[in-house]
Image (cartoon, rainbow over all chains, first blue to last red; front, side):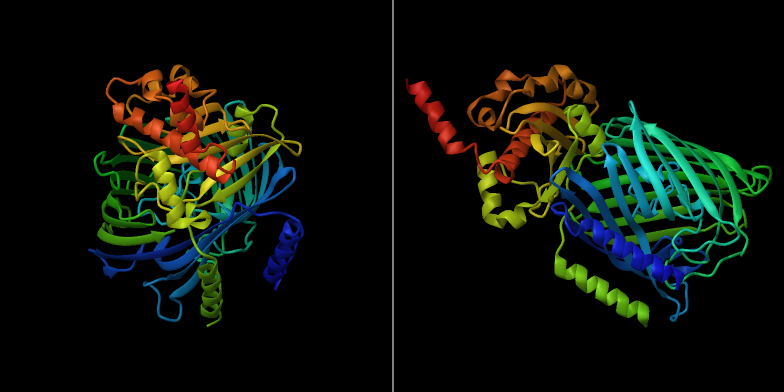
Length: 337
Length: 211
């Protein structure tokens, strides 16, 4: 009931803002994600981790302005996803990805409300929606986006962003004093070399599934305390792109941390074709040398048209803490346009 | 059941609205526009596609003006072109607009700042995948375009006047000139109401030579 009230109030607030406004910057994108693969451990599979499932969805992006310029931006990106790991009753779910309203108080002063990236590491500066290769966000924080409020601005050549969120991920809930505070300072976008420094402090909830509705079960009713510092960087030269991030801190009372490194290559003569290799390392207990996950991933991506991409991926667990090393191959047809 | 009904309603709404490919928007419009126009107070954003303004017929006209055909990957008709109308209070003091362009090593994004009459105030690469990107991004190269307008791209041999800054990236140099011309043609078509008529400009040039 409380959430329904929040949604109704939100719509009323948005309506109040936009009723007198013009909207010329509207974009609607449809999304279809068809994904299938084979795993050594689970045989035929229809999802890549918790974040990428067979799904249909859309993104609605709009900017509202008056005689004095833009003042409000809205982004709603959602999917209806089929989780092949669940029984048929629980398999269908609604996922909210971007679901935010951003109000501009002046140039470079924006306040955001809704479901968006915690501002830590590479995730807030990359678009990994629909991609086979992800950042460390899921291992590090437990989810890619969260509900809350954020503020974004810049000083000189540096951008900065802070966010206060619920610590619950895709579902809206508050339990065991859960919360998530993040901050990131980074170089301005649009240069060959970009970098960022991030900090995180919070108590986050861990869900059994990544979905908004039906509300997923929690793995534990207790929130997990997290403290992190992170560094990230990107560099582009010629047909090559390099990405990396490291994060370290504490998970409850244990030292935790990890890193990611990725090389991308676009074939110059056939620019629709791209190769990517990524290695990730993560440990929630750095004092225990067995408590780590190391994965090596390879992806070939071919853009058939401006809105259809076909990807093939091979994912190899070099080390998995539970001894459940796996090899997976995937084929993905991704429509976004 | 409720979820399925809700989902079908949402998707039906979306399908009925239409769709578009992904275009070239500014990475950080507030900061970028303030750098280009220090006196700016705010700006208005518009997304415009060739498809909605004239479809195949308009695409053919633009390709004729450009003197080249569109690349299906970078220049499909449903690509939304972002135009930022720069304001000081309520007054228009300029425009910022960008295009995607196929380069030697990947896509490039070419951003132009223009005054309300269509003259270039500034030009920069938002994205450029080139081992010689420093030479292309240098003021020595980009500032040579300041003061030009679409008429100059129609009537003058800019390849002769603005030298290739690179040693081994001639294709990126030519792609830059093509992308800038395309950017100005779209700006003229969508924002200036075809102020720069190609036939008229070429006739004027021809008459000037005849005299």
